Image (cartoon, rainbow, N blue to C red; front, side, top):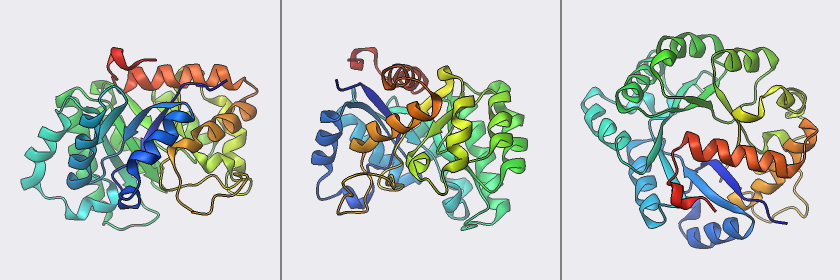
Length: 269
């Protein structure tokens, strides 16, 4: 039986999909991925994500935001454009926004400035937030805590942290997005242990395609490109680690995603 799934993190506007984007979407639907959230990480990618949503509004939603990698290039003069993009009806969440002290592609001061700007815009526009954090947990939670009482909701995208980080996020009321990182028996071992601690009503699934191809796919794809059609594989791993049936996890995570990102009611299978 094919289970209906929602992929809450897909970089469908990425240029690696330019030559076969329609086929990628068709393959995902055939695999049971009926809903997809297209990530915006710059102004340009957000505009592209919104354009893609307009091609299939019952299937797609977009996020609108500035990834911390690009914070140094975001200027106050662009704030009104970002506000307008967040207000678009195709946009289900603000972000991808947050802090990344691992890559440090942008100075910490710029990352924190742009993170706060986006959290403020999210409170103004009434959108939940799609969050990124790597090696910046304490600074991230301190900033987020200033805005959470006014935010509609928040999901920690691509969670890969330890039990302390997870418990902190859960205590703050965050939902948690799990990717194919959990399918890596080496670096995903810690995540396999703590994923069972996530309440089912706050769990969501994502591929982060074209990144994070599940390491244990068999047969191994010829391309290293990840695709939304591999989401059922992530579902199977998450369900096994939690000691639950794939059907139960699929039903809950899809329901959570449709509500969080405000998918049109007519788009529910």
